[in-house]
Structure formats: structure tokens, C-alpha cells
Length: 205
Image 1: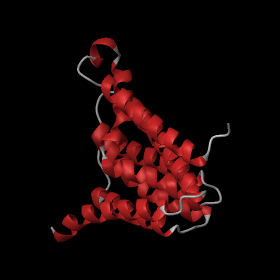
Image 2: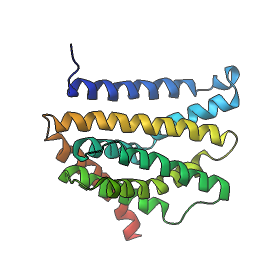
Image 3: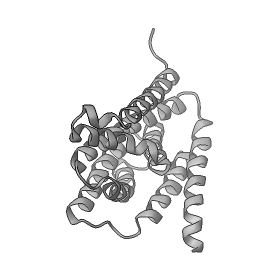
């Protein structure tokens, strides 16, 4: 039986959820007794996007929007993953982060949420630039949080998690594109509202 887009979406999202759960369990108190530091750092990076709602929402939104509206749906997710890694590497190599990281992460959720909700179609290069530009700031935040022993292994795990989240988002976007058009406004509005909730305290402080 050929899998439907809806089934594919559910399997992708469920599979990533199980992966996060297994990795979080692996990272418990006993993990250091049985695994090398590099392996533990890799798992820490793999689980890291699962523990931050802002990063999780952005990565899913990029995949969703790309699959729902882009002619070349792989461009924006690949740009996001590449620039995420670049931002994290900059933070680690320079031992400092970029300015305005938190406001830009919040702004990314607002913008990406609106793009998903309105089902806006951009040329591939423009979509990649938007996703990649925001990814630099997400990467800088990750680099700060994962700095320390095994940082590069942690970034490897984070990159894998990012790609898996993009794939899960793309599966959901494909489902929306093929028969569940209501899902885009609903999901996009939720992501945009999340971004607004993060931005408001910064603007008022």
C-alpha cells in the first residue's frame, strides 16, 4: 500500500519524537558510566532542539513552509542547517556570540509563522536567504549553550536533529499541501503567536 502524505507526516513526527525521547533517556545520570565523552556530547546536541520550544518551532516551520509552498522544497531547509552550523561555529571559534540573538530568534518565529500561515511562496533563493539569515542567530545561541568539552560532537548531534526536524516539518507541509490546507493557517498562527509572546517582553523592557 502506498503511504499517504498524512501517514508520512504522522510517521515522521512520531519517529522524531521517539528519537528525542530515547536520546533524552540516554543522557541520564548513568550515561557517563557507559559511553565516551564525545558520544555523550553528541547526544546532548541531538536532544538540544527538543528542549527549546523556540528552536523546535523554527525548524519545523521552515520544513513545513518549504514543502507546502516551494517549488524546490529542499533549498530553505538546507540553507537553515548550513547557516545554523556557521553561526554555532562562529560562537565557538570566537568565544563570543552575535548581538541581538534572542530578539532575532523571536523575530524568526514571527516571520516564519506568518509565511506558513499566509502560505506565501518566495523564489528559492529568497526563501533560502530568509531561512539562512535567521538560522545564523539560532546557531549562535546553540553554540553558546553547547560550548565546552565535546562541543563539536554536540554540534554534530544538533545538525542531525535539525535535519530530522526539517524532514518532519516537510512531511507535515506535504500533508497540508495535499488535502489539509487548514493546517497551514493554524500552525503558522501558533508559531507567529509564540514569536510575538517572546518579542513583547523584550520590546517593553
